[in-house]
Amino acid sequence: MRIVVVGAGIVGAACARALTGAGFDVTVLERGAVAGGTSSSCEGNLLVSDKTPGPELDLAVLASTRWPQLAVELKDQLGDTFPSIEYEPKGGIVVAYSSAGADALLTFAETQRQAGVRARTITPEEALELEPHLNPQIAAAVHYPDDAQVQPTIAVEALLASARKAGASVRTGERVVGALRDASGDRIVGVHTDHADHAADAVVNAAGPWAGEVAALLGAPVPVLPRFGMVLVTPRMSHRVFHKVYDADYVGATQSGDADLQTSAVVESTAAGTVLIGSSRQRVGFDDRLDVRVIAQIAAKAIALFPFLEQAQVMRTFGGFRPYMPDHLPVIGPDHRVAGLYHVTGHEGAGIGLSVVSADILLAQLTQAVAPLDPTPFALNRATLAPHLKDAA
Amino acid sequence: MSARAVPPAQDPVRPHPAAAVEIEFEGRTYRGVLGQSIAGILLANDVVDWRTTSVHQSPRGLFCGIGVCFDCVVTVDGVSDVRACQRRVRGGEHVERQHISPPSPSQEH
Image (cartoon, rainbow over all chains, first blue to last red; front, side):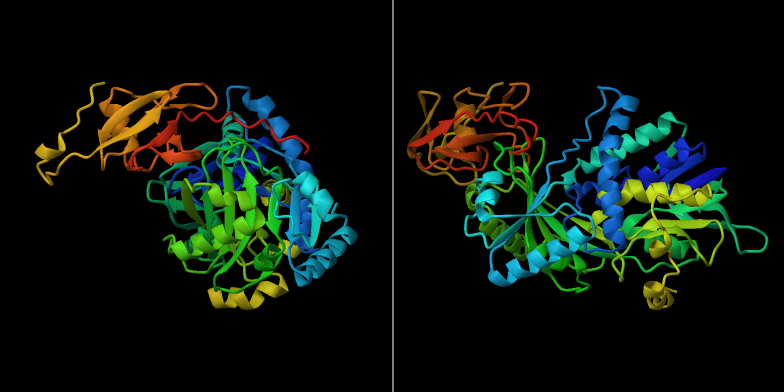
């Protein structure tokens, strides 16, 4: 069975690897470069801490058990000469500095515990033991041992290298321009690109924030929108941030649908010693210009969390687009309107973490196997998406 | 590598008198003129490297020269990560070679 995967970001790469491993003949089509979009302009978060109980949290919990296995599998397959994906199960710490923030955080953590997440409410003293450089005026703190991080660009390259070893073909610089349909016109039987036609038994749309554009080209619109964010990078420094650390406002920002600017401090070190400082959320279409006012706001909030950052230099600032779904759930599975078309997109800021389990679910759907998790909440024809689907069409 | 400093009086664009300044680097004093960058003074004195890389301990100096690459960073008067190509010397700066050890892999802290 031949499958075309559109998009060579983390989701396309994870799908390519899962499908190739199951014996499918996979071609990945990417209009730009591997990991050239969102996957190389993000932080590589694998978070359970920021998810509200529900289907997305279930996916994230499953993902947190898959990544440690995957890190080992990739190392075994690719050998020591391939760069490490820098999988670090470092845990997350969420801190509140106001009493209102503390109440919200502690209530939120309780709902997560009931959903089976390890969310340890800790005292300010314990928080300072875990993160000695935190601003000590802590009102409340929660430790999430299952938060982790990877180097996202290397993770994409590693997943694709693994897929190639198993026979996948990855074609970059090739843009999908339309669908090949069968005689009835109801079924997609491949794609037409600016280079060639690729016949396929199934086409997987994994184009991230551009999945809406690809879906429209294939005649089956999907309401994915770009949500812009900026990240600041410091030069290498000795480690003073040991976990994923963020302020309690962040959860509110991820769950909101507001188009206007929202910022909250999300701080972590990388294996190389740089510190990544986020984050912002803005719906500005595909306008990727950086805005110094947003950068200043992020920096100020990060300094409120870690006062030592006031002395740090900012070496780089970058922006990227999250694939935003109006009902805050990814789409994973077949398109109910067009046979042969599948979508795996709309993970917003969680695509790195959720990519691999999303690919597992897709594989189960394509092989009529039992999925590792009930895929119904991620179906394109779910009720919460119906009005948006109509608007997109 | 040979570096070349144009005497300020012969500057074709903006000739001006040379006000001498000094910086200290690794125990030695280097002379330049007001308006030069740290990198400019070091290069003009045949010093071509002033940072040691974290992992391979390799020497580094000027690479892009325009403030983008952060390869030329030094510690100036105790403040690290100062780009030698961008910092204009005012006189009396204490410049140190920068070497930051790679952080150990994240420990369960």
